[in-house]
Image 1: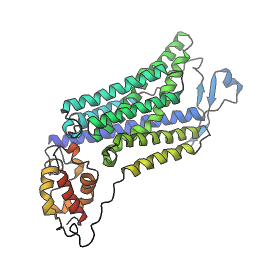
Image 2: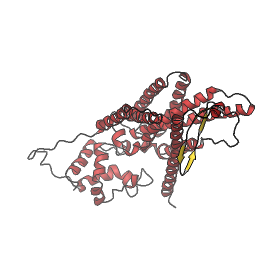
Image 3: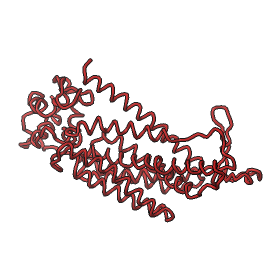
Length: 401
């Protein structure tokens, strides 16, 4: 069986698994933050005496549920205790396998952008991995330092750190890889929170109860801090993971600032949902978040080209036909979009520019990616020139004849 086909099957299954476990992780995060924000002091004095700090009644799927939360821990450890950790671990593992197979093993195509920095593929991979490690170390240091300080202050400092990392990465590697690695950096931090702090803290609480000792409240405080942070970081991570489909964001000259606006908007919208669960949700937060998103999309909108005046020399330019642009397609695009591509195991995105009819059908996408956004070729690996992009533009503007 063809090796390229097997790689495609592997990538499909891996991406599918990654999405499934990520849904489970994000769903659990959203649910427990909602639960915490929706708990009310118990009306039954007996529950208060047992140490229950809040409870909730809910109906779902034809049944009634009554979750209860203890201030630190119950007086007796239950025999059947459910843990929430594998959702996080499997999301990170499948994500790292994906970024390794799609970016690290094909860094020359997906990560290197010679117009920014002349890196070797292995150096670009080193930049990406360094970002994942550095992101966790800086965040963890901030949390340790500011554990008893304002979490808003911590959030502001961390936001500007992410912004600085976005600026640095967009100056070193391709915009597409930079956005993805900002998402991977934040996702690594989220999973590390679970692995290094949340689960170990919960295990220490359980171990103390088994010894008959009083659990350390600081374990719960740290776990709560990291869990809430993870909740706010989910929407930014999801955007970064889908951003590779939208070159108008990562190809912008100020892509790092565009990313900063979008991530901040996502956090403010998530903040509104969290406040809404508590019963107090001022509309200023989602409105401000949406305005930031709108500002980012207005900023990235392409300018309309000037239309030549009738009778002018520009208007009299001979029409560019598909035969005129075929040499450009063969030299600059076929390496990824040919029937037998040389830079990809299979045609990128399933798009094959093998016939004139296909070119005419795909003219809007070719124009958007190669002319407007200049997102293709990836990292300009085939060295398309501005004159060739202009010829593609003239072909499209002339009706893609």
